[in-house]
Length: 259
Length: 259
Image (cartoon, rainbow over all chains, first blue to last red):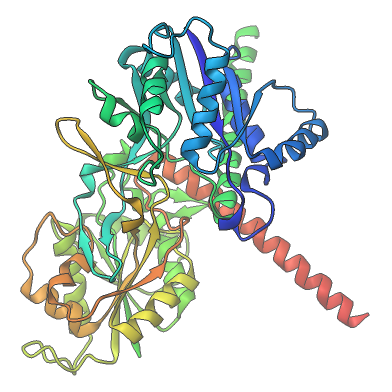
């Protein structure tokens, strides 16, 4: 199957209280966005990566790619004013690449999968990406989510609060993966709405079947504050030491076999 | 004001898939629970710490304290069969210490604050503990919570899902701090219920005023799986390197002043 990954990096950095948009902040020696793109490339080198970035940030990104000698080829697309419009631009880029698709009847894309992912979720692991693609291949739509472990409370604007049963709620992550006609048709019919905080909500009404939920990872965090960046740095440290332990165990085993 | 901290460590370790209860697992060289107790001690050395632990684990904890030469004095109380009963036992221990309190009219405790904290949240920082105590001093009841940044979806048992407005929801943490009569009276009237996933929910119905919500920390995680323990380890490493940078900056400044 042909695979696309639309990586949406529309952030302007306002929530971080700094000038540099968070997708460009350095994490373990390179910009956040490079980690994100690498994860998709490592999951499957044949995935076509479409990077949606505000037009004003394009030059800066090109400069960063030169500076870091970033080797992964992506198709660049200008972002829109909202997340919805940015994804729409990404989907248009897929359509341009995708000759056999009939835009009027939404047919011809049954062997194409499209992933949509937050640019500021740099810690997504290749295995999770592959798992969600695989689930979408079987169920048309799939996404990762994790259980809520803290107490969850609904706090109204007037400050009054109500407990809710946390076992009924899930925290939804990305990548969200769709069989091409499902997402293309949904975005064709839908109008932009602030209620669409992800792409599952855009396709929800058009779906005959329920999306498949894949077990997400607590490490697949979204970088929205400076604290998150520190937490991300910590997670990468843990992964490195985990790999080191694995490598040493492997080495020890090889030596054993030789001796 | 007099301050108590009831640290509830009732876990049996089942969710970790191991024998050793998670409060005893080693984190950066010492058991999880010692980190938790130290945070409260560092927040204010005069806080009376009450440790609620299953009776069967008491001997093991004593052994650990000897082994690690753990210097902080705590009052030990036997846990109950549920979290609710464990907290109740902790509150009974406060009452024993607390001569001027009238249990029938729930009067006499207006200068006493009681914090209730999960034993398996070892990364709570002394500053957050002090902030929540201070907020409770002003507002009678206070607790830390963080905003939901992921998409939040209600998934029913039949698999059907509904989006909810995440801006209305908060993830609730501990320590939760109460003016003594508020929590003592609430536990006096309440019956155990699986809906009580924290102590704010126990006092909620008895409260005239709304609790004060303090901005929590994403690092104040609850250790429930082996992954969490790894993450906690990494967060401690990042904190250490942050401290090192701060210390060096301080040193550099001092040298500057001297020269």
